Length: 274
Ligand code: ADP
Ligand code: MG
Image (cartoon, rainbow, N blue to C red; front, top):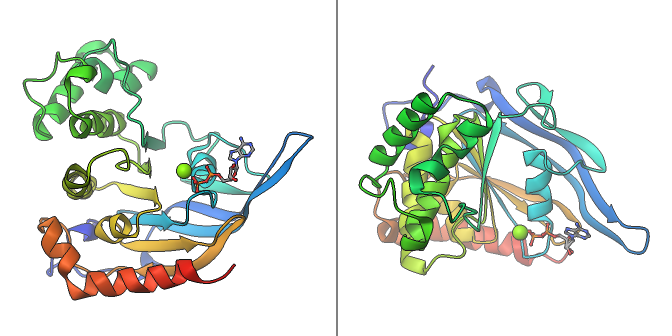
């Protein structure tokens, strides 16, 4: 089955949404933090489906509950209401199904590049020779050959984020979750990595959820964009992004009138009073 529609290749017809396989579903999610002293409602009601092979961006203003939603999707936080299902199972039991990558790369500073890439494989008890072979293939494919034995401190921010994405890909999760993965990087590196990571996700036929406050990042990387309200988060809008992206120069992409049109529409969604 051809699911790689991120490539935007004209010869591949986009299957109608109803025919596409759902790989992850959030159903009536609500999250309230309550420590007995203070009650914070972070998420009121969020529902969505993630289709196989697509990247879904979730955008919303800072503090609206994006990281909370991310944690619930990753199975790191149990929602107060509703649930998240991946491959027909609740995410808190579906270990290994979802791989995630955060804004801070969280590489272990005392480990080399290759030993950081194999981390998830090690945890899953993959034999060392096999783990190193997988890591080496990723390192070569994604432009870090020669840096296998370097320590993270000697790499640029962009290179560290590449190592982080390789580590996420190494154990071959069906769904990749990204929480503001590029926001700590300088502008130029960010645009280049957005393009890189989009291409990697497409090449590996992964499905991904990108959580970000950056509208441009969402348009540059996602097939669909879910717009959240301010806290407590609810769904304001859902846009389908029909724009050729992969292999395109990041600046050309951003100056495309269609890109700017999406930007204006999502900006207006975010400006709506709660
Ligand atoms: P975003 O990622 O969109 O910036 P967050 O999900 O981090 O937003 O936070 C949403 C709201 O929930 C904020 O008001 C934050 O202070 C609150 N919050 C997040 N985590 C906790 C927690 N563990 N306990 C209490 N409040 C929290
Ligand atoms: Mg956040």
